[in-house]
Amino acid sequence: MEARTWLGTPYRHQGCRKQVGSDCLGLLRGVFRELYGIEPEDPGSYGRSWALRGGPDRLMAAAGRHLLPLAMAEAGPGDVVLFRWRAQSPATHCAILDEDGRLIHAYEGAAVVSSPMPNAWRRRIAGAFRFPE
Image (cartoon, rainbow, N blue to C red):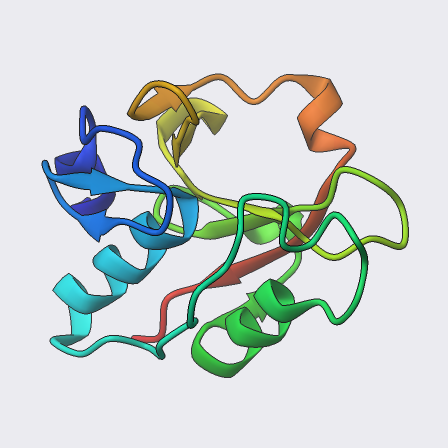
């Protein structure tokens, strides 16, 4: 799975380069680029707290434009999961499912990691998506 080749990439806000630096969106963009040879879209500049003020659900809308929605019960390794930390707020984090229900995601202050998905995170799942065939 392409996402595993990103493990250890340092965290860098707005980054999207394997082994150079990436945030969670950059990881998703980079995997998409590796799979399809193109960038899905340019997200433009975004601050660290871009969605905490509310507003449109830009991450969910972009996922809907480029990925295939699916029920979380159908999601498996290689599928994308979006998270929202507060009800009625935009999704602000994305990850790619790894084996055994783990998440591959860019962890702020660290790197791209594979970590367990605790129940607190499961309750905050906003959507699940699959890369197109």
